[in-house]
Image: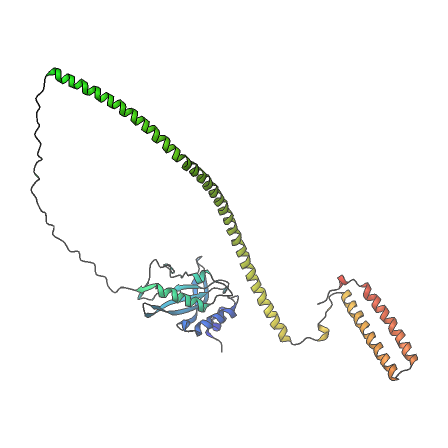
Length: 371
């Protein structure tokens, strides 16, 4: 009895390049506990270009565990025509009582699912069961939907009374009284001022000389201590510039290698796809040959040109003559034929065998082609 997946594939005709793989993966998922909430259907998917494509879709819910409770997330899993070369397209389809969580790490605003398993999809190593298991684990940590709020009540702002406290102004500042000194005589005051000025000048000169000497000594000492540090800094700066230039060259080389690896990956993916198609063709051819039964002996070696046909006939004649001579010798030993008859027949056969072998040597081996 045909499965629902096979019926869906039959209704779509020749959309899928590998319908057997599509049927096998879908039926396996539906038979597992993770896929019991899904059903096979034929649905239309609108591409980014606006084109509508009818594809096999696994729609329904997948179960997740979040905060100790079990929830069902509605999803649609579309299988592309080149499946499994390309991964499925998965969408979260919230019902009327749900909303998509904005800013989700793995689901965009249209419901399209992005996750590492789809990004690292391998045609021969990935399958739908592991994909759904990975999706359930991611959604269990961070659900992509939440329940719509039934009603929203605006917050009520409470007004607070502000009390203003008044204080008396600070007191005015108090001022000290000025003490007045009675002046001495004019002569005494002038002499005292002259002596004070001379003492101040001498002291200032001594301070300037001392300051200059100290400044010179400190400068020399600082220069002496900073000279090794300056050399070290210059050496480190030159080394840093060399390292920077080397890192820049390495960055350019790495970028070139990354680009080369991307090109190589693209070529390998194309080769894998081509090899997969050829393997499918060989598999079909082997099944066709097995259905024919065992081939006859004469059908195993088929010459494709005149030289090959001649060589095959001459080789058969050569071996037949050898068998005939063997049985002539055996008949002579048994007394069935006389020596005269034996010699006469052997002479005829030897002449024919000689001609056959000469013709075989004349045929060039490079001209012989057989299947």
